[in-house]
Length: 350
Ligand code: SF4
Image (cartoon, rainbow, N blue to C red; front, side):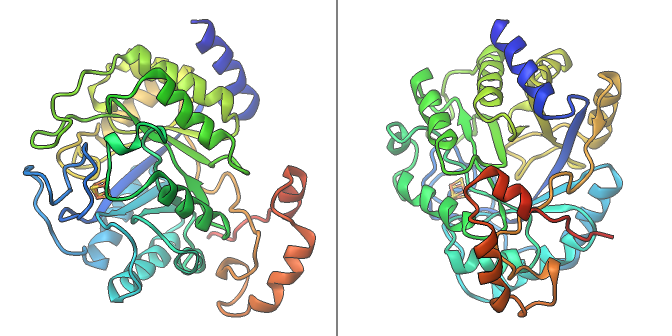
């Protein structure tokens, strides 16, 4: 309990403790992924109930996002089951989706696999607010979970995103057979990056039949609360996102997570997160829960998107940024907190 009290004090010092951001995940391209992440229903290597489907139609994405926004969602996360982003027509379609959903006035996050710096810049230009790429676990436990890409690959994608104005979302999953030391190590990796990730998702393994981790041991609520509280203390300004696994928690357990410093949830009209393998509470249930706990829904863009470079279309017409980049680089090194603050500008969102 002492850890939770300490985390709650840090939380109150850096965040409005009454606010929780409600997010919506959209699986814009489901299944058929060549990676071997041992927990994932979308890997083509495992026999699961999730079937592969092509990239979702743009209008369908916009309709889901519009319904989400009407339900109080202020961040829409679009996920594609890709190993990496390829420079092709599918990526161009994703860029159009990012632009269109951003223009609806919600923060847009993408999770599309590994990303080059150039691709991160294209997403930035389209208006992307955040890029999710989880570390999942510690460096030493990583090859027990995934063998088709390395921990260093993950860090490289985070570094590529960091060279742009897109904020970083990176966290982990509890229940992958890791030890407490692995959890601490993962947090240590993120907490000792040059800049902390703006978002830290805490996921609890959904044991998907057909995957290698289908019979892993359960994660107790106390382990989850401990992870959230520790993350809140070592990443004080980061939004800690209570993600997969919340559907299995009671209202009292969720309240304990909020007290420990979680200030974001994922909600859904279809009661699933990315796929039906991972359940999610519904919009109306979450609205009722937040009201019951005296919590409010966090508005979008509460933290302005950093402006390290001026290539971003938010501050001017696309393509006019090349000359401005050096100007900003000379005034903001992007490394010092005060310097970053001085460079922050509010995005113009109608
Ligand atoms: S977690 Fe992502 S990269 Fe890994 S198998 Fe699933 S969809 Fe592919």
